[in-house]
Length: 157
Image (cartoon, rainbow, N blue to C red; front, side, top):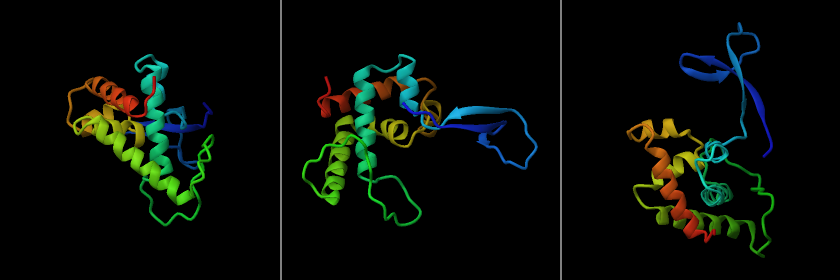
């Protein structure tokens, strides 16, 4: 995994960007390329199969261009390692959206919330648990079940 290191200021409200002209306080170097899913996998909280399922789901989410945007995007989606299926870019985007929607349905109504928040939106588990008003440390179990179902959808062994 490539690393994108950035320096962030540690405050009582959380982590924020360091202003170049501001007085410096405590800072930390963070890897912006590391997702919560990668963090869980690196610490043995997710199996390889669950991690691969999450990465496939996130790749379909990115190919389908489902992320919110403020303005119109004119550039094409570029995903390295893609297989040329003979489809036009628009057809590939539609196919990715259909796969994403079907995978979310396969995960189930109660599980898709945490799945989307952690895998696609990049929220940390504690943040997602708090937003969903779940008990602390319950998200890991629910996320594992959701990723198992998504792995079944993608036929990952």
